[in-house]
Length: 90
Image (cartoon, rainbow, N blue to C red):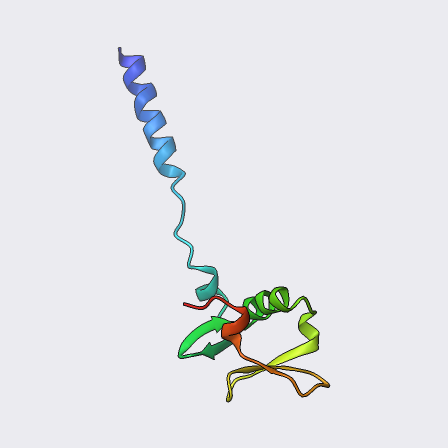
């Protein structure tokens, strides 16, 4: 009985010593993440650009986002696209 109690205490001590540390969210950890604002909501620019390129079927290097007008603009063309057409936003 004494062996079982000591074994149980040792197991409990081992499990509490392996407690996981709380890590901040990846967005909080990466403070230099560039954000864009669409209709008053902030989104990470890199993920918005990737999702928009999937909707268009084009490379992310071929278009840019103009923050002041909240439009995607195709480079070397006079084509302006609204984010709501190609993205599902909150």
